[in-house]
Length: 257
Image (cartoon, rainbow, N blue to C red):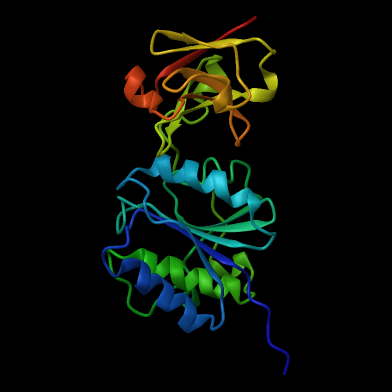
């Protein structure tokens, strides 16, 4: 009998690696989908920081092949009213809590299903570890070929990131993420910014936009279009977040050339 090809499974969590939580999730995946390939995107999302997890997932997910199953677990509401969901979007599938973590990676899902079917959940579900007992089980079933609609009834996503969609509606911009280097990632579309433009953040005017970090001296602030296609503010070999005293939510203004 021909072996069924398994979909790739990725993991994005705030579990860290000091405990056995990630290992337990992987154990379920390999037990229920033997031979599955599991890729760790990260387990170092700041604890309970759904917005940071959403940004990490959106940064990495588009680069995986079609059919990949992405498990994302940053879930401070585990065991509460929020639902566990399977989200189909862009040819990929996302599994996790309906708390806004998919807002950036799957803003226009083609289908959303609640994880309700018995085969997509463990026989006994811990109220504090849905990553193992719900999301890993569902991901294993999906990786083995089960369609998303088998997970449960169709639903609409209700979880939202704080301020999601507000910047575009109001015409304002803001810092949406601070990465490990202290770079300030904004929601400004780099493709829509005219050459020679500057940006203002935390009272500091920066620009014109540069192409690389080496365009400025060490310790100098620069603005540029980052790998995600949006404008970022950085300090060469330093931290813009520390130098400017700015973080997620800080207003950003584009100043034309």
